[in-house]
Length: 117
Image (cartoon, rainbow, N blue to C red; front, side, top):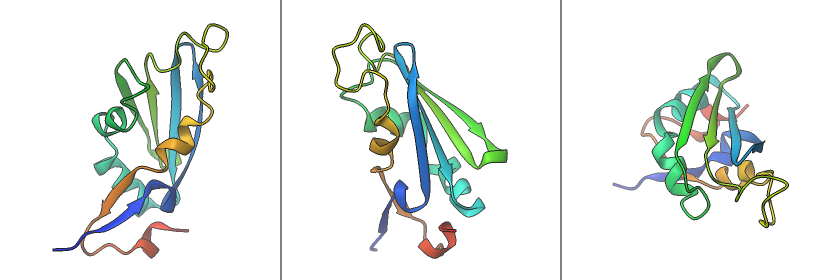
């Protein structure tokens, strides 16, 4: 059975920034169907795995249904934070774009067109 793979960027946009030594990544679905897919598939564990080379701490997940969004805090991902870190992106501004590159399987019976505005 062949699965259709999509990227998060096909169904959502993102914002990110620093929260001390962690980054804050919000993923906002374009549609209600897209949000339901995010709720089901975009787990803390998957996000932690996606950022395994930079996120040394835990990943917390917070649902924001009225915005069709899920917010993640990636603890210990910025090497000490903005003023302490020697990382190129010490404030996590690129983490949202990096997460949008994550791939998901499109569930059977759901069309990509249902997940776009």
